[in-house]
Amino acid sequence: MCPLEMPTPPYLTQSPLCSWLLALFLVLSGASEQSSGSEWQVLQPEGPMLVAEGETLLLRCTVDGSCIGDMIKWVKVSNQDQQEIYNFKHGFFSGVTPAIQQMEPLNCDYSIYIHNVTREHAGTYHCVGFNGLSENSKKNLDEGTSVLVKRAGDPDLWITQPQELVSAATGDTVLLNCTVLGDGPPGPIRWFRGAGLNREAIYNFGGISRPNVMAVQASSSDFSILLQGVTTEHVGTYYCVKFQRKFNRQYLSGQGTRLRMKAKPSSPQEAKLASERVTKIFPSGLLSVLTHVVLGLKAVTLAVLLLALAACWRSRWQEDIKTSGPAVLCSP
Image (cartoon, rainbow, N blue to C red; front, side, top):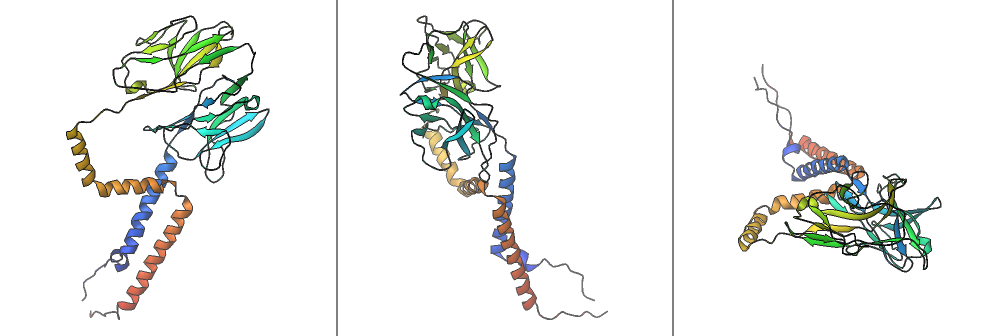
């Protein structure tokens, strides 16, 4: 009597090509699921922002939660007409350039500059995420940053934040400059960190403020503040905002000042240890790079890979049938 055996099919164990295809398929499937499951949120200041004709306008936008690469564009809405101002994926847009992107963990900057502003630039600007296939916006176009263009001789309020970026080390005291000029409705000046509904109140010149923040006010038009003992928790974009007391609503916003922390200098011993670790984990590091590269692959790629995997297994199975020889009969 022959012993009862359940041999493993050779086409599953003896084909390096099939094994690599299977491993790559599993990596792609996991990466695709991770990519689709990640959550991100587009943040931009509400405004309105006032800019003079001929000047350069900085429109700020950050993506919180995940860096989504080139899946961001800027759209201007004016008189119910929509116009694509800038697309990080493709194209050349006259008079518009991206700000220098400083990538941070779970926070990506997609701010842009609009140069030589004219009256035609007035409107509401929306920083939106979109699907690479359908170009459908993933952000409600009711939200956005409104921009007003000031012509020579127009009496109005002017908020200037001259610092676009400030770098600080842990424990430093940081000066955030803000100058308010011109005439405006009665109401306080306030500082906020971040944009949208979740923005954080930092300082209120007419009310309660955070304990580590103090006003400078070197003149009647100076609404600068000092942040004392900054840490990584203070990183973000700070806005100097004018409020209208009568309606208790935002009247005008500055363009924002971004605060980031300086990298901590490493000692020679730490640098050597880090280099040794990189050398040891290079294969896994390479796999990590590969995983990030394939995050953007779509379901079509997975389907093609699955078909190739099936064809590989079938080919190996047919070869095994041809070379296995006649069946052995067992006596009772």
